[in-house]
Image 1 (spheres, rainbow, N blue to C red):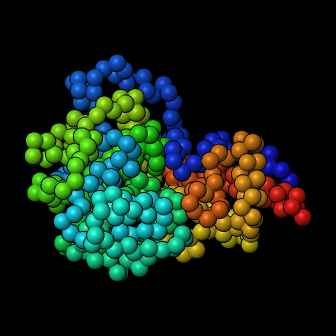
Image 2 (cartoon, rainbow, N blue to C red; image 1 turned 180 degrees about the vertical axis):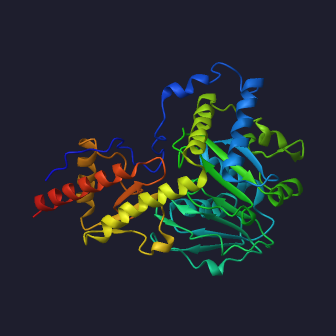
Image 3 (cartoon, rainbow, N blue to C red; image 1 turned 90 degrees about the vertical axis):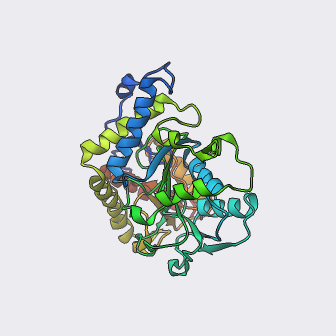
Length: 374
């Protein structure tokens, strides 16, 4: 029978993601609209965003945290253009964005000593083969493949190269061992359901030293520069952003961080996301027409959950269209470069009850689409 209930929030997109449950536009009333980001109040809010981030993510005191333009993409590109070159590079690719970073390293930066450690969608390459005498670039969680690295055990604490991590769909949902990471990037619109266009760039002391001692051979546009007059641009990591940020987005990020505090902190978010994944796992386990793209539970994402269905690509499109028309789920198609299927965001801003209801609808629409094709 057709389900009678609908999710209270039909937004299951993997980016921008669902807003945190207590979000209201009224919460943005304290935004210093019309004020310069370089005014005292503007700089105060930016510094507050940096320090709240440090506190909630347990980032070491000697790591720098900066707010940069162009979302996670801008942050990871800024890191690669400033830091890569002195050593060989190992790039770990198991989804679209890792492949994009590998392409930019080879085709834009034109580095020659580059190794790609690749795996098809749903799988992870052998991490034991990573050479840590090289710089290493990887995504912690493959937003487009539903695959995550299981932990940081494969990364040595003592290493010659830098470890550069795109963690945009992992941070606030998975444990990050900071002593094993030199650069970490993410964007506000993923796990916290913040607004788009701003990225976070977090640097270890080793990464800062690389910036101070290395001058890339390629031109750096102003928006990428982490040096000012030949010295590390410390101001960026104290709230003096490179370009003009949206103070409305900054306020929204601050409110999302306050929600994290009130929800019980980082561990509570981890638990919520894992519980959401378990709801999907229980559903899939009981049915033979749907399965995870990541068959191995150990590497299965608890945020961007990717599913395969026993339907043709056109039938999957029809199923997704019906769910959207019914106001049940928006934007749950798999990423354009990934195998056809569904991608359901299961981060902590999504309610488990809504996921259960969505899965009931998926089954109802699946049977409807299947019967119409017979």
